[in-house]
Amino acid sequence: MLSRTRGLGWLGAYLRERPWLWVAHRRRVALGAAVGLAVGVIPLPTQMLLAALAAIVFRANVAAAIAATWLTNPLTLVPIWGLAIFLGRQVLGIHGPISAPRELALNWSEPSTWWHAIAQWFTELGTPLLVGLPLAGVVLGASLYVIVYIGWWLVIRTERRRRLRERELRLPS
Image (cartoon, rainbow, N blue to C red; front, side, top):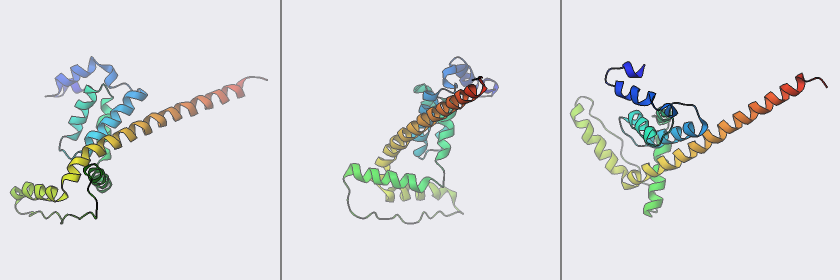
């Protein structure tokens, strides 16, 4: 139970008084997934916590928001960042070939140098990435909202039709 977890008891009490943050309702789950993916696109170490807080602010499903951050992972990083760089270049009006950044070279024997190397690598990726990441979050989040909402609607519609067919088969003619 979240309210019994040390350090998170206040959050459990807060969420218990607001059941709409946990209810599996089509709009709230779709919004939660959208918020989670939008937050998850931005490379931060606390994505799940930020997604949960954003879901609370937007009155969305917290579990869906947290789960949607898992869509951003090392396998999806390249396409998401590619979209971010594309969107950033479009917004900034940058045309021409895209220059690839150099390989991220970390000195594994000296962890104190990692942050500098990562910061330099991000700098080489440039302003299009920094401008494009929030835009990619909005685009991908909105897309996921539509996918979840319509997908849920289709499942409900299919189930209703199946039940009606079963009912018609059971009725004597």
